[in-house]
Length: 61
Image (tube, one colour):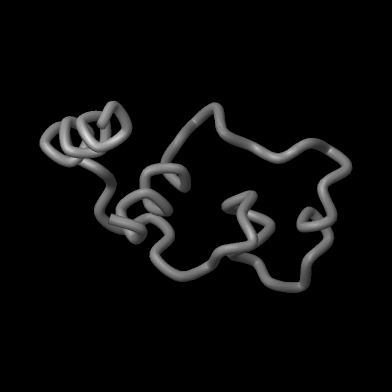
């Protein structure tokens, strides 16, 4: 689930860091491109509708 969450955020077209985010000057290209400090599991398998249903069900209980 964690891997899918990271991947989902990495695919998000509106999820981006601010212009002053320190990662914008990182020497690690994946950090700069993704806008995330997390570099593992980027751009892999995102959450599907079943995963979203499971996640929402667990948040409610």
